[in-house]
Image (cartoon, rainbow, N blue to C red; front, side, top):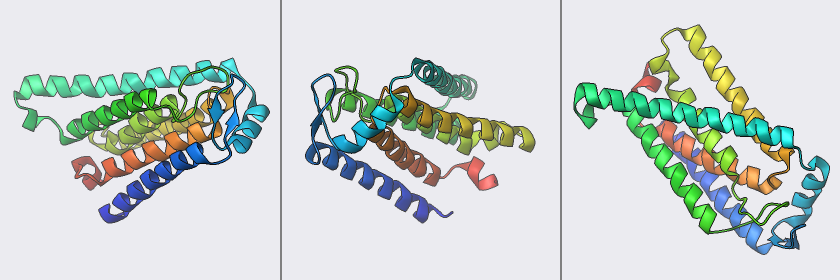
Amino acid sequence: MNNKVKYIISGVCFFLFIILIVLLKTVDIGTSPVGLPVGLYTVNEAVFSFTGVNNIWDKLTDGILVLAISAAVAFFVLGLVQLIKRKSVKKVDREIIYMGGLYFVVILFYVIFEKVVINCRAIEAEASFPSSHTMVICAIFGAAILVLGKYIKNKNVCLAVRIVLGALILIAVAGRLLSGMHWLTDICGAVLLSGALVALFSALPLPANKKE
């Protein structure tokens, strides 16, 4: 897949994310169980009524989030070690520099949507759009899948790790919905936003990707 296609995918995902926000603020506004307005209420309420609240899925996805953050910390530490040894930011692996930028943008979006409330959770008066668990897990593991080839030389091991990370992403997306902690549109928004960020990340000139 060439970079032009990747940029298009990133742009389309972000455009759909913005459209979803507009719809949530203007279409089918209902009232959540805690008395707060919820956009696209009919579909959101229908899915929530079907899934209910499941603390097991909530705890499981909490654990996956911890793993994702641990992976981000590991890349940060690797970059810090390279900086100390090589004594120049320019000599730190480009992949790690780009991942640091990705993490910064993810944190920025997290802060923005804590302040700019689009929808609140069904069970409490807390901002829920987009799902922060889903966004962080998809972005961190998605980017990691792209750069693993540089750091895991054994192709079979690399493939196995990528499969595991991909599975964790799928479990996290489904798990956050089944937990009842988020509306369906919270999950969709997180997938679109993280998809836009990872697609943009994949379009950057990454030596690890070129080798493969």
